[in-house]
Image 1: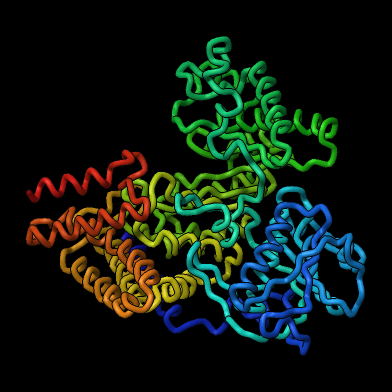
Image 2: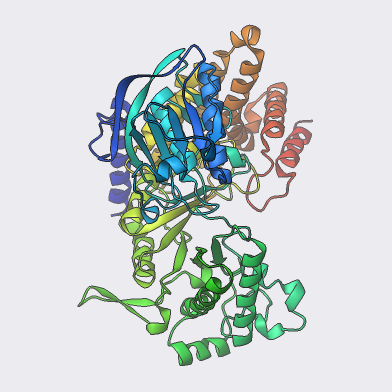
Length: 635
């Protein structure tokens, strides 16, 4: 039975690769795609720019938000780079609408307010936007919510995609058409992403890079997410005088303590007062695994007839209710969202399934969520990351989403483990399932997704590719992972693109075969660097492919040394992963000088790219210590 499951996966993945290699009949960004009914972009004879000049002006509100100002700036950044065009930016109180004037209005300008265009901010949420042409004016707008009106920026990127083919691949790799003359298009577009909140953890990612990849949490949040209990009630401030607020180990709050609850509410108020731009209150347990005491468990059952996870809901409901009562008195009109966490001892939803009725039954009325409270579900119980949630191996996780969705009216965010935390520098092949998982979660109510990837060190294995592909999938889950990965590789690796694509395909196929042959469990903590998974002959072939790719950059050495260095550094990050596996498992196969040269190259690559750890818990000098240890071994 197990072999059949593995064989079925192998066949399914081969089908995915075959389909992707042949190409899809529908361009995912094609405006004629019938799956995009709110997407009309028509050519016109109206001149946008010619020979570095344009009659268009950018109009923004007199008191524009930071996001609107950034949107106007980004529009000029790419127009200037692509065509030498810089449009004047003017405030709306200095212009009057005239149907002969050529304006690009960004945000809720006076021009927009007089246009007759209606938008629903609750539909657009923080990321959606419209592009609408009336006469000779183009209106670009997202929601009008303070601090989180990101749709205005994404609308500009959408406009640039249609006009100059802008595609952002990484912080230092983007593509566009550079033309001296271009006609304006007529727009009637509404673009709302499948996930309003999208984020990816990586030390490579800065604020502007995140924005250009359209990664934003969807919230303004200074307190952080995930483990926040002690950020609101820090032990160093309260523990000595209020030990009964904390469990006996001092590792979690005692959620049943009423005095602690009221103190927590006051701490949230102080946080919101100190951070007027904050729009999220995240209430999450600390990252420890102690369960609460038998006495607290008994009291929880007596008062609420539920579990520790259910008590967390009771606690969070209390906090939300008190903050929502207080909020209009100090901050009328302010929108706050609230999220808690399904993780560790709070992972299992306090419901049971009634097979006769086909419905979930809550432990008690107390565990139904406040309407403004949502849940972030951590995929810590996913049995195998190679398989989608729809596979029976991952049935428990799939049901978890439905159970929590029942309690919180499908106000769900997903916290996905997107790396092997024991093997940062070995490829984490979840690409066969992640797109399907995003679709499944969306269909079951999820509107937020956080990819917890590399927090404490960069990875040598396709980190930028993951950031790009997953940003696209979270915007439109109907897209194909492989199509996006191929497009990224061919652009990001330039002349060596085909070789890196060959390496990517063979590496991926090898991992598929290892599942079938070795029946390995692909999870976020598996020891996948062992020799039994990586035959020397295979690694030698991977090294040859990447070295052949690097040789293709040689002409740039003389013509564009800066570009040469960038491309070589990119491909050597992939070589770092291969060399790591070769030297870890087969160092004795190499001549001493060859091995030392490999180590020297790895060290330079690590230093350039913040590759400092082999696993999540390693020291900041772990990679350096490993390489120095290998040198000593060879001496």
